[in-house]
Length: 312
Image (cartoon, rainbow, N blue to C red; front, side, top):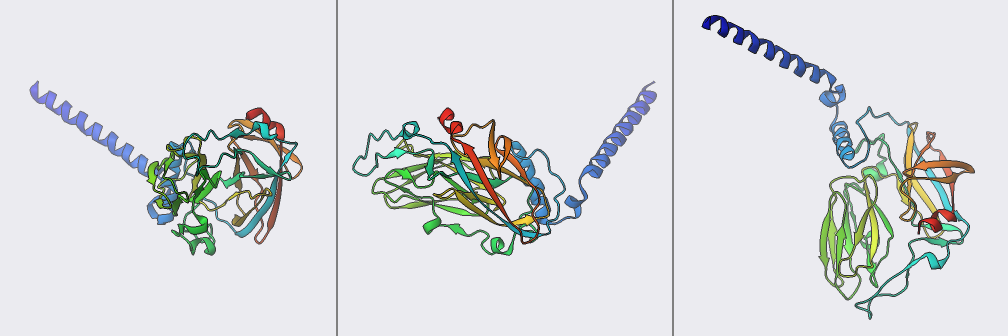
């Protein structure tokens, strides 16, 4: 009886081993071929996709399409109607009054109908370092520091950028152009809380891309606030004073899912007009038809002022 029990145990163990081996082989087959024999860029894209998923970004890794060239997207974002100054939130300046400005904290800035500080960014697959996806102009400045005029600065206790866009492979200089100390508290996936002395600076190096902008504030001056977004792909733009923008060297021949963001607009569904056609956006998402190589696509985006007035 003891020998029969031992035989059954051996058989059960053998069957279990075979089942585990079958499962392991099955798992190996399910891994996309491009991971086992692909490039480092492919593997990075897949890894980033899983990180993005954990951060609320793209759901799963998919086969990346192959672009046919590069084009340019230009345009302007305008506001239909008016957003009165009474809707703006005033700074509550209660310290360092000899340095800190008491001007209005204009969370919505509209100049002659043009919306400033609107953000547009590509929200699809991207192969970092692949020359078919990343134009030579971008590859030439990979890893370049964002300093000097490109730095994230604060003056008179105001962040000079309401929204700042950068890439994961860049290092950002965060400046303090005031004669009093500041604190830069960044609430992103790569979080940081840094003290910055008078007329000094610190650097910020993100690790992960963000699915949406994160807040930046100063604990020393609680009325100060701003946003930063970090993306792998360089296809983003922040609108200028007149609402205009340009996104250069966008890959052509592929679908172009984009997002539009403004700090005051709702995070859910809202409507805008793109080139005269009404578009209902969910979480700011909209799709552009593929560009042709060398094409310059113009986008005229109009937003009704009621969206801002009702949200403030």
